Image 1 (cartoon, helix red, strand yellow):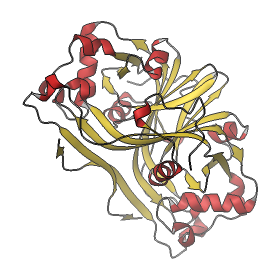
Image 2 (image 1 turned 120 degrees about the vertical axis):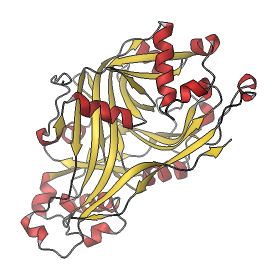
Image 3 (image 1 turned 120 degrees about the horizontal axis):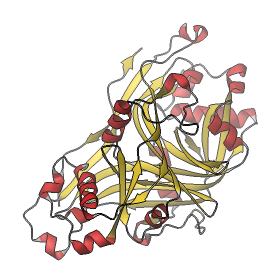
Length: 196
Length: 196
């Protein structure tokens, strides 16, 4: 199954495009931060925040009073971008240096989640991003906390994925040079937990 | 010295704000990806890309024909966001879970770099992000490659930093619970290089 390949979601570099839901979901489930772009009175903002995917919905949350949450709850258009950096690609020529990555962009409007069941499920999913099963271990949000938290749902429908993988691609001229070329893989590593 | 604390660059959560240039520069010099938000015909886009800081200027680059580069070269307003995730903050209560991070947002308009000296310096700085000194090792861009590459400069003037550090902050109710609480530090790790 594919996400909806609309004009605005179309990736210009066709060789790097990927509209497959399996790819999109894998990126969303691995990355921990999304970057939410939106416009308020003609001014563009990009705000980083955590999120969770449940089925074909992306949930973000925040203080009910926050600007991001208030603006999104009004139903403005958003562009949510998620990128995992996989490697630094060192070619023999400066020009052919690149990065390996997997990224997703989702376009749409957020809907405020008011049903308590869905709100709790979304918040559990967000807490579980820190550690699988964490929502079952920590004290669940009480009524006051649920009220102080806004949860917004963005449908993962109009979206696109993009990636680059593999070795550098040098040209004929560069290939002859005696310069180390290859990939330095990078990954977000969890270090030893520090007890509070 | 501080960056310019304008209305749009003001951080709403004052306890997390940081307008010091030392902080802003450190975040820019450590992170490898920025997220560029801009508007084309009323549509908001957020595009991830690499960048480099030289002095008080942030440089991005790309194919001369790319949409991002073309649009930015026209002098549209941009919001460039950079975030380093430092840790997952696990509290005893779900509500108090958080993340440790350092982030920067820069507002402004990009200027296309046409002077060859500045263009070469910016591209060298971007290549050096992959590995310090790399620009001296790899073959420098030739005339054709320089022409095929657009470099854009965004002044790091109207900007703000934000961060959260340290342990979870539980409330009195939560603190009594027998639940592990603490921080799982995370960091982007470079793994062993893979020769092409």
